[in-house]
Image (tube, rainbow, N blue to C red):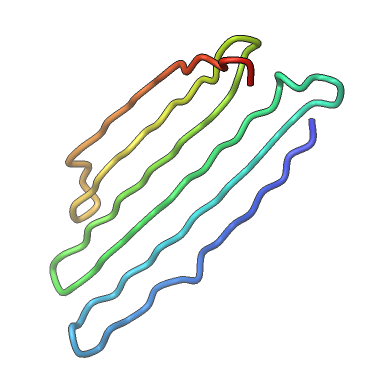
Length: 101
């Protein structure tokens, strides 16, 4: 399997006048096995953080796309944290007909 990954994480940025630090990071990967086009997959993750005195929120999301001969399959996960405690978690799945694609 060949996998290509792109990582983007510039680190924390501080807005001094607001006393707010924030970070936006992401990672995208695509993989495929030679001679097997239906093995192709794509996965994207994103993280967003905001921090102030006594307050820290973080959002994490992940999406994965795969396919069969008849459908695209999409899965997504989302989680929100407040002061490193999970306050919301969601998972979604969908099958989307390829419609000759």
